[in-house]
Length: 387
Image 1: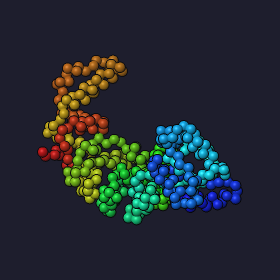
Image 2: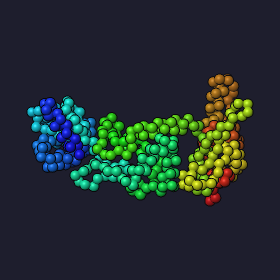
Image 3: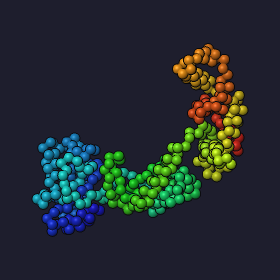
Image 4: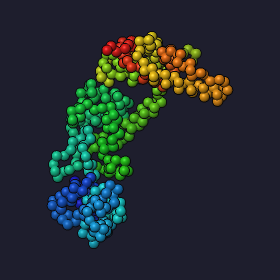
């Protein structure tokens, strides 16, 4: 615990006429009182030398939280402010949160960083009652957590590749015997706790060096963050593909994703191809195959007459398009507007064919949202799910 570290600095400073102070921050008033009691019972040099202070979440000494009257609170503030003088009998402050008011102490040499709550993946909570908030390395999972950072930093693995590796190759499980989700993988890879520091409360700007053993170095953590940032920039620059998340793989039941491929022509120009295929989130070995966007659109156009459309929603979209066209014509061309009475004569399935061929990615996605049938991609063929 931090007492040993404090004792070293206390002996070092004593000949200089200065006093070393130990500061311990806890997560609630009960733990605050328990820690203070433990110190006074187990360390004779701290008998009667522990100052216990209850604060609110902002670090202010509060009458509501402490249950003390204003006069007693002012006495606490004075004791906290004067603790580094040789006349003060106190050597330790145990507080809920970091103190803000009445806190002008210069001789705090040891701050004990004990992270409250459940230990993150790769660590285990201590079960001993006298070691609350302490964590130890999980010998089974910690090496895997370290490899996650190494694979991102050194081999430039994506979060999804980490997910497939954990789930399908290692059959890795959390302490609760669950697979680690993709979102949790990204949370783990951005958790500072693994190299020895933590922020408490979260987003407070208060950072502490923990007493736990780090799993990785800060240098490895920083390199992993740089790779994650590059991946994020690449993902944000990708176009919004028209048919992703709206079609299901017919072989394994995963979703369908898209990718862009670029090919240089002999004349120096570049042609772009968009391919759709299974995400393989349910089966990494799925052999669904890939289909070009042009072929996918051709197949959808042929299926139009068989589709069960939400005609009211389609008609609303068409009317919005006509309204937008009318505004453009009136504002910039000064021409007559389209007669909305003719909208009833429009075949909505012809409009759907037009959207598939000429619409933007957003318009194509909106069209698919009007389809009541479920679309299946299997062996490069798009079909309707059989009831």
